[in-house]
Length: 331
Image 1 (cartoon, helix red, strand yellow):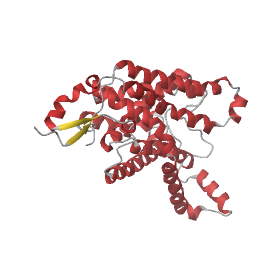
Image 2 (cartoon, rainbow, N blue to C red; image 1 turned 45 degrees about the vertical axis):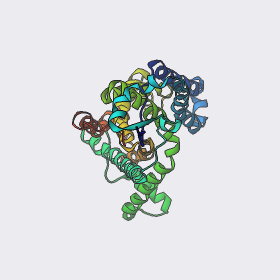
Image 3 (cartoon, rainbow, N blue to C red; image 1 turned 30 degrees about the vertical axis):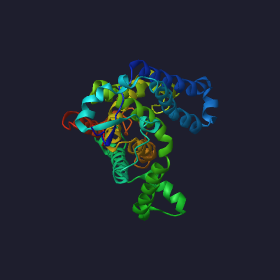
Image 4 (spheres, one colour; image 1 turned 90 degrees about the vertical axis):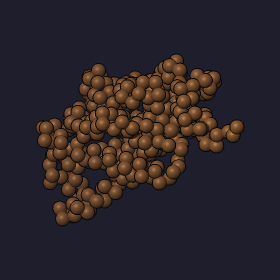
């Protein structure tokens, strides 16, 4: 009898206790990183190196995923991969256990064409979401849109040293180039989040309870993870922390659900990481298109506010309801 010649790398059915460890370690590390900011006075906080704290914070899911993986690999193969027996028999495949890079979604990187295509799609899609959130918010009375872009024109004029009205189109093209460049260059930092949430946790929750439950559960936990930053005014300003948490959980479910689709269909976390990086890089758009002197309420406006969730929310609903294989692992 000949042995199977092909191999199958499957997502393990990780014991709930290990998944709980992942969640607790991620939340605990997040509080360890964020607590110094909470304990600082407002004056000390304004002088603190925010980028250092944020970058460390974004690495905590990856660290927790490594801890959980090291626990997971000590489990008997039957516990982790017993659920794949029928699939292996049907495919005539030999099981290949996940490596740590597989478990975190860093690999596979092949086929390269698929990875590049999904990464480009992620960048374009989330740039479009970020831009479209502004007129949608304006139509719903949530964002002070001014298509004459007075703030952008003023900034461009100061940089050029002359009246810049006739150079708006060129200036915008350059700015879009900066946004995409920033999204590409920032992908490694944002990958730290994705290694934990979409690389490790989401596929394991999906194995147990399906895509819909995995989208909701991953969104809830990752939204709660932001609590230390929300407590000091990141993202939603001085919004009461419980309201800010509710908003962040909503954001994390909707945006995280789309990111999970990018991760599962591409086979790795890199398209989702590019999307996360684009969300940060494109945040400047709300500044350029705002009415001069008008405040922006991030609870309701831009991609992080409720009006900005409309387009990605519609896409997510379509994926979960009508696209039966939208979250099937890439082969």
